[in-house]
Image (cartoon, rainbow, N blue to C red; front, top):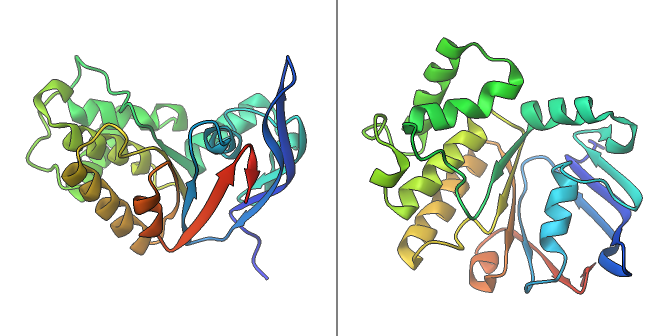
Length: 220
């Protein structure tokens, strides 16, 4: 049996003051899945994403990403894991306003040590892939919200990660733009990328192949 791309085994994340954001959670996501983690604000879903993305460490339990036990990796090794195997899409785009979108996307390869010329080539290809081949010289303020989220998706996939983590990717978009972003993620999934979407929108979650509901820090 193939090892999963994501494996959480009885993971807890507690903060000072007695706040437990994630409580004894176990989860397995296999390669090629398209999964929605769905729940209201405060349910623990964003904490789970940060732990899966190795942006934070658990208080207890085990996390394995692409077969790597994250507890055994140094901060430098975790950075390398993120740079080469994980792409992130956030609700608030996080694009540099004064730079064109090719540069914004290419910057996603900085930590992977890719030379500048190759970064530009890969960034242009990623933008074509998400339907923005005619916008390469544009800056973020010249794009719609849906287009800016497409830039963010292009930046996340430019390094061809095995895992894409999307945190409320439609949260700042109107219904039509949000549906376009979900369609784009579906296309990436069909091309082989494993995708985990964090959302409070049950309608969006219901349209994905698998739903993992959360409440009060637990999978329910």
